[in-house]
Image (cartoon, rainbow over all chains, first blue to last red; front, top):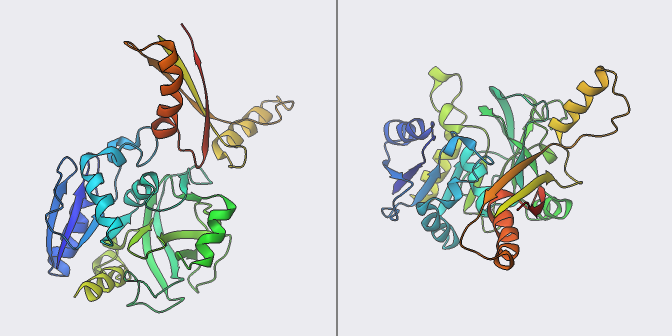
Length: 229
Length: 80
């Protein structure tokens, strides 16, 4: 199995993601520059965190027009696994592979801190190694993570169990206080209807080694590897 | 041809930046300011297309690139 990490100008978690997959999980992993047209036969595409194109216009708005994104879109529509982390999630929303949009955090602050999220749905290829309602401690680092979608979209997400992670407290309670950025329904991560495209604001690649304070992010990578294996 | 496109949040979308500006205005005593919505302005300079074509293409550009239709709306005007 092979992983591909897309690199945009302004990506800054590309090396972290590559490192975790390659050195921690010992997976065949390649970088794919955004101007390329070939996904190099990867089995899973990861859109890493960062500030693609300086977040000009809107977060993720310019990256969606990068040449490789056409390939990523086709790959996703054919059922290929795509994981968008932070800025990668924003790109997936702009691209329309996931519904909704991101607004500025409710407190207008750039948030860089550990948060707790819980697994709302563990019946996906990205979360099946975790338990339902398991609490994960994973860091966030974003300005625009305040998830918004019209009420009918939110209803649809709930109906289809597409909400995968919710901000919660350390005990897994989904509270207003735990909702650091103001996201509707405390949404920290969601999946498409087909179940092959996941976007999440927290950074699992920053929580995959105990030296970094948490290894809870490993569940996501372990789930993918197990699923593909 | 110069065109100005104005992007703002849809009424149904909260605008925390606008709210903060409103609160600042209130703290300065401008209590009559009932609401503030913050937006973006784009000035485009077009050449090689007619006004008629521009009228078709500007909404297209706005919808596809300048605004995110899920959260934003736009208006535009031809300046000259």
